[in-house]
Length: 134
Length: 134
Image 1: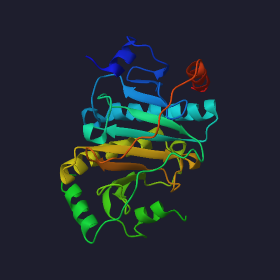
Image 2 (image 1 turned 135 degrees about the horizontal axis):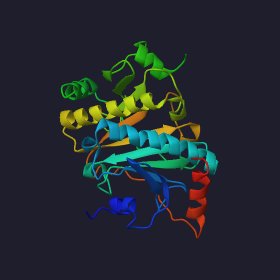
Image 3 (image 1 turned 30 degrees about the vertical axis):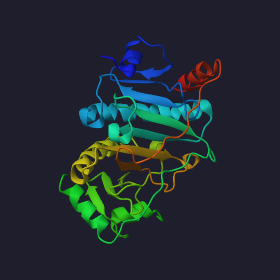
Image 4 (image 1 turned 60 degrees about the vertical axis):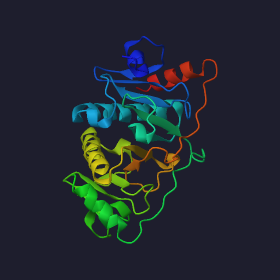
């Protein structure tokens, strides 16, 4: 496997490991958006959300919640953002599924993606197309 | 309760409901980043991740995964991003905890927040502060 996250998990690459248990590993992003920016990964190599079973996904978010609390208390920040880019189309950089936990500060200037509206009937059509696959 | 998401869940405000079960509700964001942009919420009113128990959080991400698959298949998109802003400091707009699921297309130009590096010893100190609270 030539996966950088698998190498970090295995200890074959140096990292700042925040947490690990039998299913999940978390480490600092060395190029943080803000200090304390943590990456949370499953220990098994799976590329995307669809390749995770529900139990693995739950293990990841349970750890995410635990780390979020420790990041806020430890670093004295008052909130955080969670980000996950799923698949190439979402500009996922490392093909090992991962959450980013980014400490936030009021007025830190981190903006949101631009939003737009739906044209007449477009939301209804969109809803129908999604629900047909649910 | 004057919570817009609680009103949507209760049917007191119109919405495009994508999915609901006993614990979780999902509906289209009427100001989408891309069409099919879906908001996933717990049915109980809790403001942030810390106020959710692990079971409720797991229920949310299990639904998120299900909807992500349906969005990709139904709308013919090849990926999505997940976003959650936790607390005021993270610029959380509606104080009812929620995930955004945003359909993505390669080259859609949705950028990432700028990253920087750690100064000498800063990552070690940061790691120590987080781990003391874990």
